Image (tube, rainbow, N blue to C red; front, top):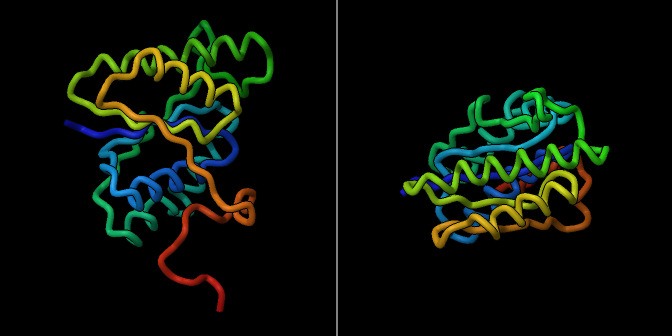
Amino acid sequence: MKHILLIVTGASPQVLTETLFALHQQGKPMPEDVFVITTKSTKAMLTDGLFTQGHLAKLIADYDLPAINLKDENIWLIEDNKGQPIDDAKSEIEQTYMADFITRKVFELTNKNNISIHASIAGGRKTMAFYIGYAMSLLGREQDSLSHVFVNDEFEFVRDFYYPTPYNHHG
Protein backbone atom coordinates (compact mmCIF):
# COMPACT_ATOMS: atom_id res chain seq x y z
CA MET A 1 0.00 0.00 0.00
CA LYS A 2 1.29 3.44 -0.94
CA HIS A 3 1.34 6.05 1.84
CA ILE A 4 0.55 9.68 1.06
CA LEU A 5 0.34 12.89 3.05
CA LEU A 6 -2.53 15.25 2.33
CA ILE A 7 -2.09 18.64 3.95
CA VAL A 8 -3.68 22.09 3.90
CA THR A 9 -1.35 25.07 4.18
CA GLY A 10 -1.59 28.80 4.35
CA ALA A 11 1.04 31.36 5.27
CA SER A 12 3.00 28.81 7.35
CA PRO A 13 4.30 26.07 5.04
CA GLN A 14 6.37 24.83 7.98
CA VAL A 15 3.44 22.62 8.98
CA LEU A 16 4.45 20.27 6.18
CA THR A 17 7.98 19.64 7.48
CA GLU A 18 6.72 19.64 11.07
CA THR A 19 4.17 16.95 10.15
CA LEU A 20 6.79 14.83 8.38
CA PHE A 21 9.10 15.20 11.38
CA ALA A 22 6.29 14.12 13.73
CA LEU A 23 5.46 11.07 11.60
CA HIS A 24 9.15 10.08 11.67
CA GLN A 25 9.46 10.62 15.44
CA GLN A 26 6.34 8.56 16.08
CA GLY A 27 7.58 5.70 13.88
CA LYS A 28 4.64 6.01 11.51
CA PRO A 29 4.96 5.19 7.81
CA MET A 30 6.55 7.99 5.82
CA PRO A 31 4.58 9.15 2.80
CA GLU A 32 5.90 8.44 -0.67
CA ASP A 33 3.89 11.34 -2.08
CA VAL A 34 2.69 14.63 -0.64
CA PHE A 35 -0.38 16.53 -1.81
CA VAL A 36 -0.87 20.12 -0.67
CA ILE A 37 -4.07 22.15 -0.80
CA THR A 38 -3.47 25.89 -0.65
CA THR A 39 -4.42 29.19 -2.23
CA LYS A 40 -2.80 31.20 -5.00
CA SER A 41 -1.54 33.85 -2.56
CA THR A 42 0.37 31.33 -0.41
CA LYS A 43 1.87 28.97 -3.00
CA ALA A 44 5.00 31.14 -3.41
CA MET A 45 5.70 30.96 0.35
CA LEU A 46 5.35 27.18 0.21
CA THR A 47 7.67 26.67 -2.76
CA ASP A 48 10.20 29.23 -1.47
CA GLY A 49 10.52 27.64 1.97
CA LEU A 50 10.42 24.01 0.92
CA PHE A 51 12.34 24.12 -2.36
CA THR A 52 14.25 27.41 -2.85
CA GLN A 53 15.45 27.48 0.77
CA GLY A 54 15.61 23.68 0.69
CA HIS A 55 13.93 22.86 4.00
CA LEU A 56 12.23 19.72 2.68
CA ALA A 57 15.50 18.31 1.30
CA LYS A 58 17.31 19.27 4.54
CA LEU A 59 14.73 17.40 6.64
CA ILE A 60 15.08 14.30 4.45
CA ALA A 61 18.89 14.46 4.66
CA ASP A 62 19.05 15.31 8.40
CA TYR A 63 16.95 12.29 9.35
CA ASP A 64 17.90 9.97 6.50
CA LEU A 65 14.27 9.70 5.43
CA PRO A 66 13.17 7.82 2.33
CA ALA A 67 12.46 9.86 -0.80
CA ILE A 68 9.34 12.00 -0.40
CA ASN A 69 7.81 13.13 -3.66
CA LEU A 70 6.25 16.60 -3.78
CA LYS A 71 5.79 17.59 -7.41
CA ASP A 72 4.43 20.94 -8.51
CA GLU A 73 1.31 19.20 -9.85
CA ASN A 74 0.69 17.89 -6.32
CA ILE A 75 0.29 21.45 -5.06
CA TRP A 76 -3.41 22.02 -5.60
CA LEU A 77 -4.68 25.58 -5.66
CA ILE A 78 -8.25 25.95 -4.45
CA GLU A 79 -10.44 26.84 -7.41
CA ASP A 80 -13.68 28.71 -7.88
CA ASN A 81 -16.67 27.29 -9.75
CA LYS A 82 -15.04 28.20 -13.09
CA GLY A 83 -11.79 26.35 -12.33
CA GLN A 84 -9.81 29.51 -11.57
CA PRO A 85 -7.49 29.52 -8.53
CA ILE A 86 -8.68 31.74 -5.70
CA ASP A 87 -6.25 34.20 -4.16
CA ASP A 88 -7.45 33.69 -0.60
CA ALA A 89 -10.53 32.47 1.20
CA LYS A 90 -11.87 35.49 3.03
CA SER A 91 -15.34 35.85 1.57
CA GLU A 92 -18.33 33.59 2.09
CA ILE A 93 -18.32 32.46 -1.55
CA GLU A 94 -14.58 31.67 -1.39
CA GLN A 95 -15.25 29.60 1.71
CA THR A 96 -17.84 27.65 -0.28
CA TYR A 97 -15.33 27.08 -3.10
CA MET A 98 -12.77 25.94 -0.54
CA ALA A 99 -15.15 23.49 1.14
CA ASP A 100 -16.19 22.03 -2.22
CA PHE A 101 -12.61 21.79 -3.50
CA ILE A 102 -11.23 20.10 -0.37
CA THR A 103 -14.13 17.65 -0.21
CA ARG A 104 -13.72 16.79 -3.90
CA LYS A 105 -9.97 16.14 -3.50
CA VAL A 106 -10.52 13.96 -0.42
CA PHE A 107 -13.21 12.07 -2.35
CA GLU A 108 -10.86 11.50 -5.30
CA LEU A 109 -8.06 10.21 -3.06
CA THR A 110 -10.26 7.98 -0.89
CA ASN A 111 -11.56 6.28 -4.04
CA LYS A 112 -8.07 4.86 -4.65
CA ASN A 113 -7.92 1.60 -2.70
CA ASN A 114 -4.16 1.16 -3.09
CA ILE A 115 -3.25 4.21 -0.96
CA SER A 116 -3.30 5.10 2.70
CA ILE A 117 -3.89 8.79 3.41
CA HIS A 118 -2.42 10.63 6.34
CA ALA A 119 -4.26 13.98 6.42
CA SER A 120 -2.92 16.89 8.42
CA ILE A 121 -5.23 19.61 9.67
CA ALA A 122 -2.41 21.73 11.12
CA GLY A 123 -2.15 24.39 8.41
CA GLY A 124 -4.16 27.03 6.65
CA ARG A 125 -7.15 28.93 7.89
CA LYS A 126 -9.19 27.32 10.65
CA THR A 127 -11.92 26.65 8.13
CA MET A 128 -9.45 24.77 5.89
CA ALA A 129 -8.59 22.52 8.81
CA PHE A 130 -12.25 22.02 9.58
CA TYR A 131 -13.12 21.17 5.97
CA ILE A 132 -10.35 18.60 5.55
CA GLY A 133 -11.11 17.06 8.94
CA TYR A 134 -14.79 16.91 8.16
CA ALA A 135 -14.21 15.43 4.68
CA MET A 136 -11.88 12.80 6.16
CA SER A 137 -14.42 11.95 8.87
CA LEU A 138 -17.04 11.35 6.18
CA LEU A 139 -14.87 9.70 3.52
CA GLY A 140 -11.81 8.33 5.31
CA ARG A 141 -11.30 4.61 5.42
CA GLU A 142 -9.77 2.25 7.98
CA GLN A 143 -6.27 2.66 6.50
CA ASP A 144 -6.44 6.48 6.65
CA SER A 145 -5.46 8.74 9.53
CA LEU A 146 -5.72 12.36 10.61
CA SER A 147 -3.40 14.48 12.73
CA HIS A 148 -2.53 17.95 13.94
CA VAL A 149 0.99 18.95 14.96
CA PHE A 150 1.86 21.49 17.60
CA VAL A 151 5.17 23.24 18.15
CA ASN A 152 6.39 24.89 21.32
CA ASP A 153 5.25 28.49 21.73
CA GLU A 154 8.76 29.86 21.20
CA PHE A 155 8.84 28.39 17.67
CA GLU A 156 5.23 28.90 16.56
CA PHE A 157 5.71 32.16 14.65
CA VAL A 158 9.41 31.83 13.84
CA ARG A 159 9.61 32.06 10.04
CA ASP A 160 12.83 30.05 9.77
CA PHE A 161 11.71 27.16 12.00
CA TYR A 162 10.70 24.20 9.84
CA TYR A 163 11.48 21.26 12.17
CA PRO A 164 13.78 20.39 15.09
CA THR A 165 17.19 19.69 13.59
CA PRO A 166 19.51 17.04 15.01
CA TYR A 167 22.20 19.73 15.43
CA ASN A 168 22.47 23.08 17.22
CA HIS A 169 22.05 26.30 15.20
CA HIS A 170 23.54 28.55 17.84
CA GLY A 171 27.27 29.03 18.16
